[in-house]
Length: 557
View 1 (cartoon, helix red, strand yellow):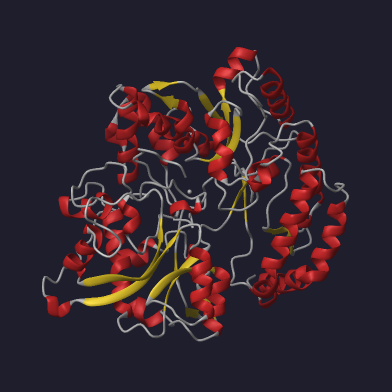
View 2 (cartoon, rainbow, N blue to C red):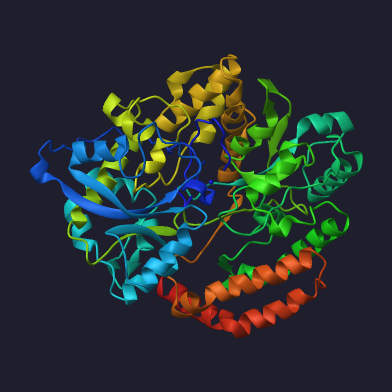
């Protein structure tokens, strides 16, 4: 769903959604984020004369395991769409998830689009200006069901506004819940063994990291304090990232925040960022961070967690679905983990950085012959994903032809997926799991999570350990009600289409930022290089972007 777009789930039967292997902070990478609406009726055709064909492109996700005899060309999910709503799905091409975004760039550059595909905000603007995609205003209004329209505006219409360019609906937001937070996950068995307190402050965090390294309770060849991978500031690094660490220092990765004078300023160049980078550099010099982190992807970095070399990691709520690979071995729980709010560097509460819940959009090519078929796919996904008790037919969309949850992640085959913009999992799930009372569950997502947690609790499936750490009484989502109630989050204030300079220069600015920040962390340059970066950021387009963002901000008041 995100964007959300989430990780390693060997033999897991999980959720999120992010958006496959993009590891978004919006949901787990192996179960769709069910919702609470009752299904609407979408008539199937059953008449081959009514069938319309729409093409797309798909990432080959490593967590999607095909049933025997099935593949992207022929599978039960595509078949059931054709049977139920008369839409035949074909793929113009398939690419490994690691290469998918590059292939999309090439397709756009060569004007070789399928009927519909998923693009980022900058590409949405680029395609609009190049007149390569349809204005969906009328098509959506005519063919989207009332249930679909209601579903995509439950946030008041904010996410839909981000898809509007010059008053035209140019894309369908790949929506997800923006209130997806990050947390600190810690080996609690090591805390007990070493007599350490639970982390409440950044000072506690540093002391725990130092103890985990020097005492090496995992008994490995080389121990570190915190797990970090390359691209640590990206929203797509939902685990082994450093955005949460920045938040603990009241620093935030590339969001627009109030400047105190009625305008907006970019978070990347604020003084708090320099303080956070200095702390990371100090940790690196102390050997608390793997010196090879900058060349390791999430999976490679996580190996140090699995083998007991690292006992702390920042991550999204679904992080336990990755931790389970080290925590459960040979039918036994061999690692005990706890989840805690992000510690703060001072007496001010940490504000969890969140976005708007949308950073990608489904667009329809101007060459598409049946754009209404794409809207039908949208309607049907919302029907299935909002059904508390899916019928046998609807289960095919989620699990494949055998209609059984087996961890194959068949839901990833649904070519157009949008997620719910808010949930109450933090209020419902911990209580239901603690009291073993399913009567209070309200959504299909909650029902699935409860059932998985119960499998671990009753001993029938030890591999469901991770769900209790997500949804149980002391799980990740149990912290959400307090965060929500106290407004301990900071949301991006800019939600318009990319400004002209942003579309042209943001990628360059982000690349320059990451390059300097990594060098600072690795002690290759002085932390004072941050000041030089700020000046360069401004000259490379940052000042012009700031001007454009504030012109937009004033126009919205």
